[in-house]
Image 1 (cartoon, rainbow, N blue to C red):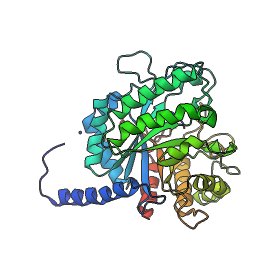
Image 2: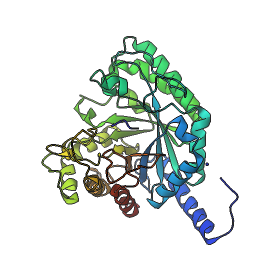
Image 3: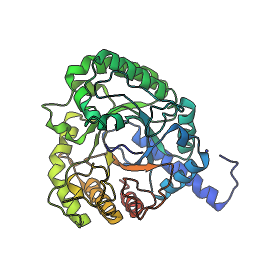
Image 4: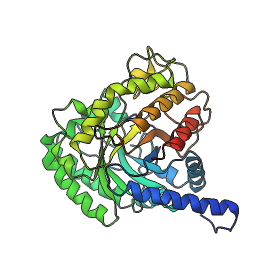
Length: 381
């Protein structure tokens, strides 16, 4: 995954009546998405929101974002909260509070700050996921990423990670799903099953009291392993951060060409369905930066923006249009919908200042916003 970086007394008006109907409709969606069925009747129409502790306290900004997401037909918000580690061999993975000089992309929300973001979203009918996300800045300095962690003391790492998850979970009441890990390629294999299994048991014991389900977000290249890790069978759902390379496309590709290029990855997605039958399978991330790349941005959609390449908001919109067309229509081998929905990467509480010049993954305020709205307006079943 590319790392980035709230109420008042209602009056009885036509607008408030509409809002009430919208909340009821989205509430039924929330129940369907949290039910645990392999293919919920209403798909997840999601967006990833990168949330720091400072962002969570900005009530007006949060309410404005919720207004925008409702207009985009979003029904699920994935709150990505940053956590940190000092190096690729580090064994202390932790939340970093406000005031520390260690954080790079923002402080980790406290439980109270996290609740300040979750409560208004749930009150308005959104399904909420909470996803602790390891910030990669210290790792990038070492030429690594979160999928290459090699802690010097794995036992200490998992003990610290469990404590960190429990601290974030303490502020996650109201959320429907809690993501216990994201893209830890080097640590998710069965070699570490003896570490993941007690972690799942401990987190589940706390999550059960909050009516939350657990899942893990695999990186798109997981299909290269001999098999999926057995410890993941204990989870309630599975997800993939789907930055599959779309080869053979130029920066000027059409949305139809993007959708066609996705077809080469149907068997990879089917592998998730085959290994986790009867469980929801989500695309937890899909997206691309609004910037051309040489020779093609589509060949590496996870790539961070590079210097000297032109901004191209239209490319980002085209990617979302084509990817949506594929995911909305892709069928699994049993004829059911391949995925239970998608969460686009990404937005934040802070609006983009100059969207026409922006080269990041941010969606809101750029043509990609309309692409997501059109995608979700058509993806109703």
